[in-house]
Image (cartoon, rainbow, N blue to C red; front, side, top):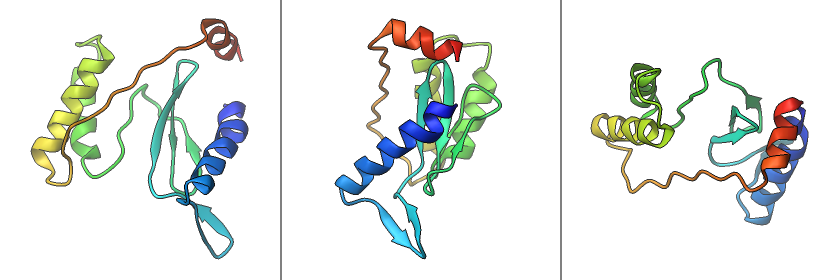
Length: 123
């Protein structure tokens, strides 16, 4: 988790600043949206104020339709093994019941360096 708290958040903050998305009010920096990051087999939620959280379950949902997505993810836990299918079902549930959620969706999965991945998992 140290990598996420220090290195990743610093890099994320720099990207937000470079793109002009970093906001500052009362000496507090923030960015416009929460993001989910999977790293070394763990899921992290990075909030607008750069706080990093690690959910109890290995799934999480953010945004306007998060309650519906959580319900879908919970109901498919242990039943559906394919993560992309579970994510798609959660997004479909969110868009069916919240007018603010609409596709198209992009689901990205990438493991570029398996050795780095394995080293990070051992930390």
